Amino acid sequence: MFRNIFQSVLLRIEKAGLVVFLLALMLLLAGCAGRDNSTVLPVQDTFHTGTEGIMIGFLESSPPSELLAPASSGSGYPFKVALRVQNKGAFDVSDGVVAVNVEQDYMSLDSSRKAFSLLGRSFATPVGEEELVIFSGYTRQFRESQAESHDSVVVASSCYKYRTELKSDVCIVSDAFGVSRGPSSCAAKDISSSGQGAPVAVTKVVTKFFPVGAGRDVSSVKPVFELHLKNGGDGRVVSPGADVSSLCSSGPVSAGDSGKVWGYVSVSARLSGARLSCPSVPVRLPPEGAVVRCSLEEPLEAGASYVAPLIVEVDYGYISTVSKQVRILREG
Amino acid sequence: MRVDLLFLVALLVVLAGCSGGSSDPGAGGDKFKSGTKGLGLAFMPGVPPDRFLGEGRFGVAVQVRNLGTSDIEQGQGTVFISGFDPGIITGMETSADVGRLSGRSSFTPEGELNVVEFEGVVSLQEGVDAYRPVLLATACYSYQTWAVPVVCVDSDSSSTGQEVCSSKDVSLSGGQGAPVAVTKVQLSPSSEKLRFVIDVSNVGGGAVFSEQAMERCSPYSEGLSFRDIDLVRLESVEVAGRDITGSCKPLTDGHIKLINGKRSIFCELGVEDLGERPAFNSPMNVRLKYGYRDSVQKKVELVRAP
Image (cartoon, rainbow over all chains, first blue to last red; front, top):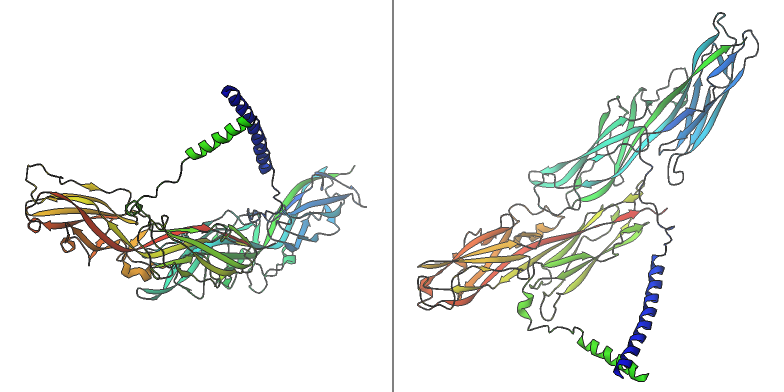
């Protein structure tokens, strides 16, 4: 009798166990269902990286590698120069100019300069805007009577104003002497970067704190930031005050108020929203780089260390150039 | 059919009855004099959240629990909040009293708990899309250690007769319910004196300092100097009913100066004070008093709303 009872109990337990197992499985599967991540905001800013700004490139066959020129006077043969212009940096360009130069003795263009505006990389335009700029031209009468062909080059330049923007957190440490034994939520360290989405890069920021006060009674500290700048692109830096439209012409370049043209940048910076004291005039940026110092006018009161946002802005003009070989064939 | 159901119910009742019941809390007292912590700190989950979107009111709540055995009275403990830019998180008070917190006992087996709150307003500056501070909650408080190792007091160490106990070292493991602990007492008897070598260690993981420097514990102050840290005041040492505090050395103005977090002091009891009596076990009361600092961190991300 007890054996029958026991067997009956076991059977009930088995059935109950199966039901429990199925319920648990359903709950597990429900929990593992994919969550809707559409409300999760992107965290990292991946756009302020690299050293590219405006990139230009010829389309494959515009111009073609060979052009035909008439042997005698008369209308020449048309051709097109098509350029893909892309903003691969993080700054929006609103007054850029693309200019094309050809050998005037052999080719002529309807227009040698065109303006462009392109948004840089951002959450809204992750790859940066691009457009096609097309120039029309025609070949001229072939001058050399004996030659069958002439090798020439088509040069395209992009000229624009740009800005490098570095946003980073720095540790504000008021114990300038390092003698206090206190807890700290951060440690002062240099910031290194390979680029901020612009051809001129802030490669390093060195933070230094200088005590302000009498004797051992240090009541405040003055932070000083050493900004290491370098031209990481393949073009030339021009003063931000220079006239962009004249940069891409064959005429003299207007330097603006500063009087300095080639290789100059303007630097400004803010710490926790307060403007730092940086050089008030454009500073020269040689090929090997430059160091610029910015400091906080009002010293910070000594207190607990904390993380503060630092924003560095470098303004400049930039010219980059590409070229393409073309062979001009004499008709006939 | 009903019989098997009844059998099943009976089986379940028996199993429930056999499951581990609550253990006898015991007589209390001694079992709480263990552990190496004083105040335990923790940010309350979600306050603040790991990620704060937009601007507006920003709250921080810190749980403070007395994990040791010494009571903390009102005004003896303070929690500080630091690590943030006051220009971004504005209007936040940076310190709060922890209040009165009883230590662990039979009445409060886990130690008394309090939650201190701080509130500010987040205002991201122009151009700042995200700000990632590391919030630091720091507790500064006065605490005591009371160690009671049992030592063998033998006035005639040369005696060869059968004794109740023999002079041997006493190791104390697990702490005394405080962040500074007596870890060992070594006995070194001689014909005239009983010498005790008492090892003191900072076992709590935080920083110990002289109580007199409590004001400089705050992260907003000039900070503790080398002269403030690693100082523990020797309140008293008693053995066999006698106060031998005066014999203890080396002390600096009544304080033990820890080196690399530990130090040994030497105290003596004159044999003549004991009279002629056989060896006996006696509790040695060692009381220490000090200031202590501990901290916890939390990374937070403040993001500008799109």
